Length: 336
Image (cartoon, rainbow, N blue to C red; front, side):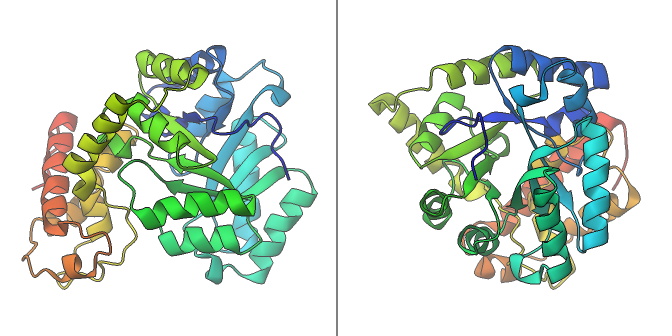
């Protein structure tokens, strides 16, 4: 199975951040990306409006001229079919090139759900079925299991060796590897360094986030003329790794459960989550309660002992609380 038009190592636009813009502005960024040569667009049902903004930005362009990726949450055949119908309507298309199932471990997928996904491929409403996951084990199983055509996984220069091995394994198995968070949720500063690193990992397709026209222009320019891995660039990448490697929480959940009930994966990644979410999101009572509880961390060390990546989990929770506090201040909201 080959996705027509997806060349080796070519990246695309991650449309998540477009939910922070109004529909006109978001659509304008999508069209700007297309006009500058980007042909892969990744939307999601996780954030309302990203599929609609992608559709509006690509309006009037022949469907064969670009590739669409989106992801859905579904636990059974019925919810899968419903989510697929909703995505196709929102995207204004008869098919998506890659549909990634999110929030389910491969071993937990029922026979009915697998059959629904297979039927979506047979009917040509979906060209390739993928798995979107932050779990190393789930991503590896998806690559090796023989059912999935693609994997969507956060990968960047701060990733651990075992994560990078999955990308190499995907190439061996003929599975497409789409890398979310190529800039590590804003921890990395050099787009050239991030691209150079990922191009050295294997046949990885990074999905670049953007909220401003200059980010589109930078990404498109680098996609047209990929940076060479020079000594200076390698030194910059290594410097970023040394400064930020301990700050990247994958959200795998192995640190759970917390003895005092903190949602550690959310709290540790709160800064990144609110950074890409639509403005005004995550101000609800449930999220406020989660973050209030995060301020009650007793420092028992249980989470750090269980973190396979050796992160300072307590420090990440504090960082998440501070960034959420700043986010709520910007919204004019009180939560403590």
